[in-house]
Image (cartoon, rainbow, N blue to C red):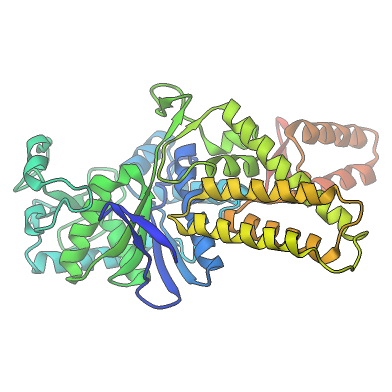
Length: 464
């Protein structure tokens, strides 16, 4: 029986999906104007693990995670780089898949993009206007926040308290400082779409409401994202969605905690802003994932090299024992299984599941996995081992790895220095007209997912 901490009610609740055996889950994805940072990686890993465990429990999970491919940040990047917004978005969507793929994050059932849902967004806004929950103002469209009586229920704030800090920025023509934009009038040289209110583009909050509804329906089981999205993004999603559909938007709201870098909040201004694309060149992404799930998803996590090294040591201990068990399997005998050991394994699985059932407590689940590793190491000291017992240990290790997204047997990955050395060897082979060896090296690198590119400046490589 899975229990989830629901941000909406601020308590753990027994999970009861809308439809037996099926889960509709929406996770807010990144704005694709740059490579993702380590803060973006945390929800990707955390909710991928939630999805994996729900599937382990037998649920059919429809998992949707969006890309925001048009907003102020993308427009700014477009102007600075001299590239179109769609081109920038496409490049960084591919980079997102490369980075999260390295972290063993499975692709969502659907990855909707804002640009593909422009007609849906316009229709959604039209309904809100018709119902009296939104209004047009000189080319902009705003949501009437006070028209939704339950506004503030997710972040547990009263609308009167929110009014104190609210203001109307220059250029905004709102009726109330609390109102927020659903549609923004286009500025000169910005990407834009035609609408009943003139050329423009959608506000940020409306996008997720529309994409969640189009892919999962009026009411979903789980809506998830980073803690920073609770207010105003998710609060606004609830308001506009429930006013549009007259139905509960999501039954469970999940939010992961922040990441600090050496006990300091991560920010560009402090220079401690870490991109996943950079960090996985130095740290094995499997280790990074193991480190990230070593803390409960709702708790803050502190990133530093010492803690990552500790996680690496813990993972290597598990991987080492697993490798030994597989090596011993061939020499194991078919004698009667040791029921005492088999019972220890069964109890361990029960504990693992009880920890994951308790709001997906990966930290305690990993501790349980370490306990099983200790038991396996004890068993491996026996002079004679039983094939059935070893097979059970291996099976359970495989199950834990699948649930937590941890790879137990990693392929050898070439380091950048090794690749450079092979490129140099290829260059020498070409100089010596040993084209067979040059082609052989290219093929070897290609098999490792390394693509060579001949440029005016010389040979470069990228991981394909």
